[in-house]
Length: 87
Image (cartoon, rainbow, N blue to C red; front, side, top):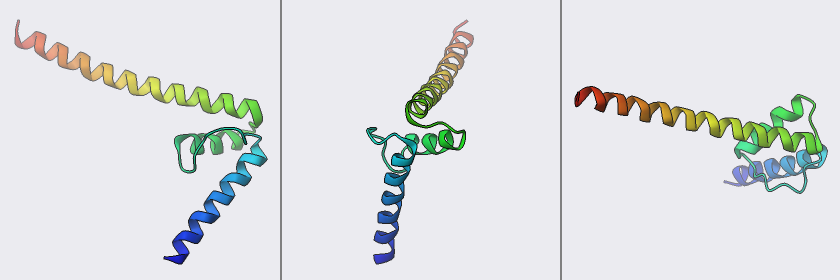
């Protein structure tokens, strides 16, 4: 049990240090959130500060758009199936 708590503490400390190093201290990004993963990817691309924040926001928008696209394709397939059924 103690090692689990220690691991969580270490991860939180590492995340705080990352946010300082990347210049994104004022963000509300949480540990293990989608922003966490995107921020790490952005930093590996060399983005910091405002550019990293912009990267994370844009990537989140792309993810949301892809999800919306998938949902709309499912809805379209359902509509087409109903149209075929009631022709």
